[in-house]
Amino acid sequence: MKGKLYGIGVGPGDSELMTVKAARIVGEADIIITPKTEKKEGSVALQIAKPYIQDHTEIVPVVFPMVLDAKKQEEGWAEAKRIIVSYLEKGKKVVFLTLGDPMFYSTYMYVYRLIEGTGFDIETIPGVTAFCAIGAHLGYPIVEKEEVLAIVPATAPKEKIDAVMAVADDAVIMKVYKNFDEVQAILKKHDMADEAVMISRVGLPDETVYHGLSDVPADTKVNYLSTVLAKRKDR
Image 1 (tube, helix red, strand yellow):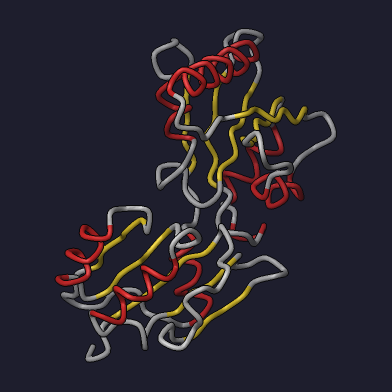
Image 2 (image 1 turned 135 degrees about the horizontal axis):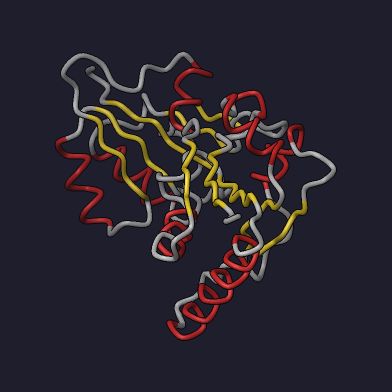
């Protein structure tokens, strides 16, 4: 009997925001793969899924190197593939957990590409994205009527973000933890900072909310799990 890989989005933080299907499959899993880097211990995604994990399930942390060294990265991905395939060859039901949605800025996409040509079945279970959770949590409409929504990684070149903000009515800005000061400056330039909100670790016990980003100190230390929602002041 061949094993099967499931990519499961656990949502942004609240365990109850996992879908019924995701919770069921996590409960049936033989193996749960949790991605980690060399520097960080623990897994937020694992903690979110924890209420549904059964005693028979084995938790397997797998290192996915986030480095610029192409050779080291290639070796890391090859090892990750070897580990996952070894369980699939034993007929195991293997679950790969990821925050938010598996097909939205997720490590899972790379895992999917590694396994899709190996002959094993793969099923991807969608999850609630952080920006959808933030909109619902704060009563903040993300996009309305004919407005144009831009979804932007803050890690993109400044010029690219600036060009997108110039034409967007509303914006979701991800990965703001590294360069919040640049994001804030661009939002101010396009008159979107006053109406913007930022949440760090939405749905988790230590959630932090910032309403209006004009007056937030530019050197504010922003958590890795932070997202900005913004809209033009005249909307």
